[in-house]
Image 1 (spheres, rainbow, N blue to C red):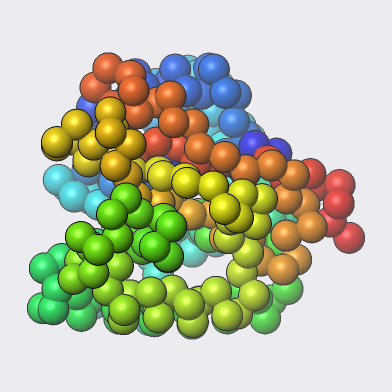
Image 2 (tube, rainbow, N blue to C red):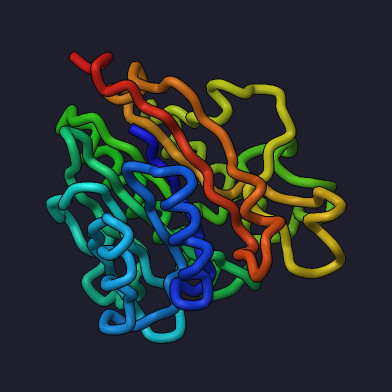
Length: 260
């Protein structure tokens, strides 16, 4: 199974790029974030014409997540549990071919400190609790998406410039660490522990040309799914194309026959 996560930064603005990606790479699953489209404006007809199915949670102008699959998936959870008043579309879970796939768009949190950062940290605590539930269930699971978290200094160009940013603040990395302590596997780092790997490059200051990026898009595998990990990488070429997202697809290849 080839499973990718891709923050498209507006699904309708990046539809051609997504369709080309589906044709070129033939992924089995793509988790999308930052749709920036209300529910009724999701381009399901174009995706179905490309031979795929989708479940999605849209939101006007902002946020939004979707899971695109070769065969129909079964929805498990819409919205991250723990706050009934939270109206932001940032989380979707499906069951697909024996694994649970959670697509998430974790809040940015800037400016920090402040209300947006408080929301980010509270959201991360809710994600930690959901992670515990998924692991307790024992099902093979993946947390895939734009985490808006730079885990370590090796995951950012010039880390000294990011110490006060919500993506890299000590509290953010500590919250991410508490999630990882549950036993989730950072798939990219598991296979490429020492490489410089980025998944996001700003549109400004020729960031992509200078390779001044961040690694903030992650695919975390549960202990039950980790034995299936075969390969992982970043499709950097997508960032160099016309009208790109500022993120590029990040992927894992899973050999599901390795699961007991």
